[in-house]
Every structure is written in C-alpha cells, then in structure tokens.
Amino acid sequence: QVQLQQSGPGLVKPSQTLSLTCAISGDSVSSNSAAWNWIRQSPSRGLEWLGRTYYRSKWYNDYAVSVKSRITINPDTSKNQFSLQLNSVTPEDTAVYYCARGAVGATLNWFDPWGQGTLVTVSS
Amino acid sequence: SYELTQPPSVSVSPGQTASITCSGDKLGDKYACWYQQKPGQSPMLVIYQDSKRPSGIPERFSGSNSGNTATLTISGTQAMDEADYYCQAWDSSLNYVFGTGTKVTVL
Image (cartoon, rainbow over the protein chains, first blue to last red):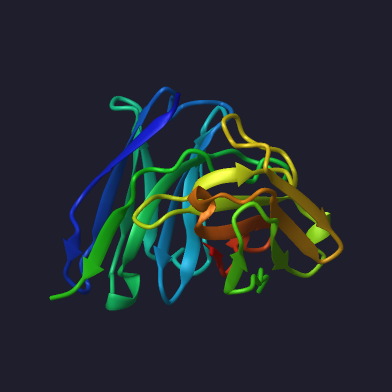
C-alpha cells in the first residue's frame, strides 16, 4: 500500500521560498510507471495542480503555467522522496498543499493516493 | 482556459440516489475521475476512467461521461457519504483540471 508523508513549515514570509517534502513508502520515486505530483487547495482557487516529476530512463518535470516561473520539483532517490519549492511567494499562495501519486498519459489521469496535506500560510 | 463546472450543492435523503454533474467542453472526449473529500481530510479517489471504482470503494458509487457532462451517482446514499466531491480531467493545454466542487448533504 502506497503512503505519502508530507513535511515542511506551515508559515512562510512574503517574497521567500516555500519548501515541502513528500516521503514515499510502498513505491519508488524512480518508478517507471508513476508520476509524483504537487497539488494545492484554497478557497479562492479551489484545487490546482502545480506540477510533477517522473522517471522514464531520465527525469522529467511538468509545471502548471500559472506557477512555471517560480516552481521546482525535485526527486531525491537516496531518501525515496520528492520536494516542492515555490519562490517569491505572496499571500495568494496561502493554501493546503498536497503531494499525490499519478501517472503519465491522458488515459491515466487520476491521483491516488494523496498525502495528508500541509497548510502553508504566507504572512509576515 | 478549460473549466469544469459543478453545482455548489446537492441534497439527498438517506437511501435515495444522489447525482452530481460536471460540465466541460467536450468532456466526453476525455477521461473524468471523481474525488470525495471529507472535512479536514485529503481528497480520496472514488471513480477513475469515467466509471471504474478503485479497490475498496463501495458499489453504490458509479460514474458516466458523455457529451459535455460527466456524472457521479451515489445509489442508496448513506450518512457517511456526506462530503465534498470534485471531478477532474486532463486537458492537453493546461494539464490537470479540477471541477469547482459539490457539497453533498444527506438530510
């Protein structure tokens, strides 16, 4: 059974970098069939997919247009986890952030399972 | 930009059928999936590829997708089904898109 455990600070100052980590158990970040995603949820923006990393003989990343200039998602094979970095945050980035396992391809477009969620507040 | 629209709320009596719609341009040409989210919890997949149920999801949850509308149906609704429900699809330009969400109330 795949489980995802998130960690990271719940408070970030404006203009600084939001950093979260998602530890994977029951699967591998280097899996050739999975993709590892970050999704956030806020009252104003609803559920919003942010990006993913996946391994298919080499590492790939895809990012949502809305955050593409500010986001980095990195795998860490030594710890079997992946991370999210979102730069230059503003109060609009306040949300619950989730990591989730997915796959690559239009026919494999669901997320399961999800991490427990981390409320990140951007405030001075 | 691609959008998926859901009714804000649906009310249903225990034991009755709840139907939740998700509307998007030519949604039937894509695969839709559905998530259940209870207060303070993460979303949980209940339907994928329009109509398939993950292991452990009760048979009372079913789905369909045609034209511009995907539908999640809960037959014999139970009190434990009270939650927010979100549809989701993949759009080639915007990648993953989520619906606006529907709060299901079991009266």
